[in-house]
Amino acid sequence: MAEIHVEVVAADRSIWSGEAAMVIARTMSGDIGIMPSHEPVLGVLQSGPVTVRTSEGGTVVVAVHGGFLSFADNKLSILAEIAELAEEIDVQRAERALERSKSEDDAAAERRAEVRLAAAAGAH
Image 1 (spheres, rainbow, N blue to C red):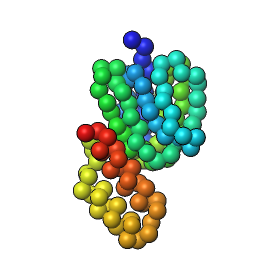
Image 2 (image 1 turned 90 degrees about the horizontal axis):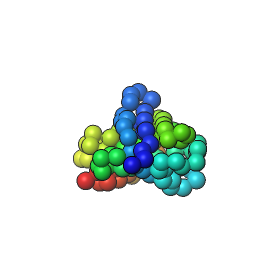
Image 3 (image 1 turned 135 degrees about the vertical axis):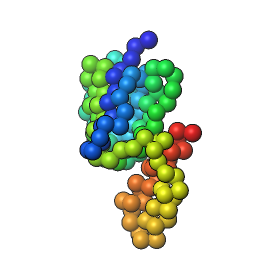
């Protein structure tokens, strides 16, 4: 089975690395699916969940806020400003942040909280 090597890195740490059959991410141009032998691509990421379908049949979901992705030679690099694995997300804290951002009319904070909650939901 063909694979792509994936590296997900945030500004402060490495988030996930491994082999995948497919990765789905949201770019400024829309959603993109990357599979082995995809044409080289460079894209600016929108805040949203990134879904990695691992070679072993599992799924890794990462909440990504900003950054870019680069794919060439079956290697995908996702370099995010902020990123966290779905399983690391404190759902109750994200829900509180969402409510707070709505009451403060903070659209950026509201979007970050929504992405975190979407990623956490996608992992279950």
